[in-house]
Image (cartoon, rainbow, N blue to C red; front, side):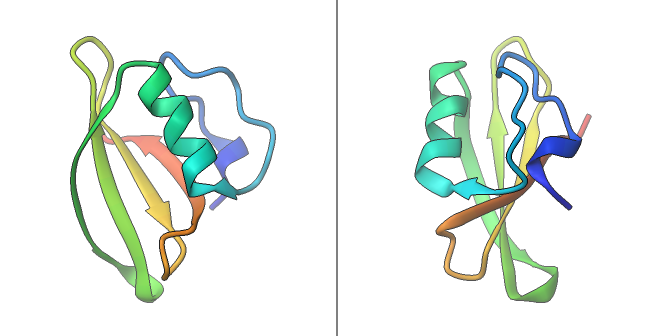
Length: 76
């Protein structure tokens, strides 16, 4: 699971395997995404869902303290 494995609609291709959460979330915010929820994820990680009026929903997996974005992908 790494950020560089998936292309997110409206966001330039990410070549890093992980990013600080603030940096990654700014990419999503700049593209017009809004965070709509969070929940616990496997391996003591945190997942969050982001929505956009035109693009598909995105699920992001964060480190246990939510400081690092580990992966992100479209869920529909």
